[in-house]
Image 1: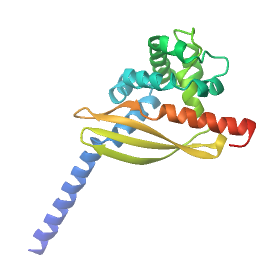
Image 2 (image 1 turned 90 degrees about the horizontal axis):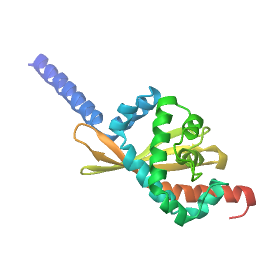
Image 3 (image 1 turned 60 degrees about the horizontal axis):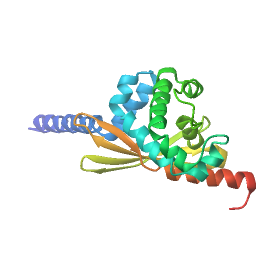
Length: 207
């Protein structure tokens, strides 16, 4: 009887571990790990399985075009008029997709920026992203994962040594059945505005 009890406990432990692993494997964190691995291995197709590039870049352009004052400080020399940016949204979205795909292929922000197909509007989405999470930044932690049915909001915390602070990038993810997929950076506009304030404070002092 004792041996049978031990066997049942072991079976329960193995089953519990298996189901826990399966829940991790099908959860948002696992999909983010796979996306990060795709970046490391320069696998564009696998990256796009876990990140809806068109949706993310389209949303990014929508949020960026509403940050004219922040762009003026973070993107000197670029066209920052809101009206002009809104007119160029399709071109900006296409350029952002190309930049991101080229970055995955090469691992170089400089090469991706140089390969932009449309330079009429001098706004690099990867360049702006680098103002939030720059080469000196380090991933600190997954701040939170809030699952609500088929949708999840995931906060990724990064250090920002330039301003001696940390920033949380919030990702919206959707359940695609056998995996989760990033569809939006929900707070990119707010982050750009916040970084612009930090940059202004660093340059001019005060609040």
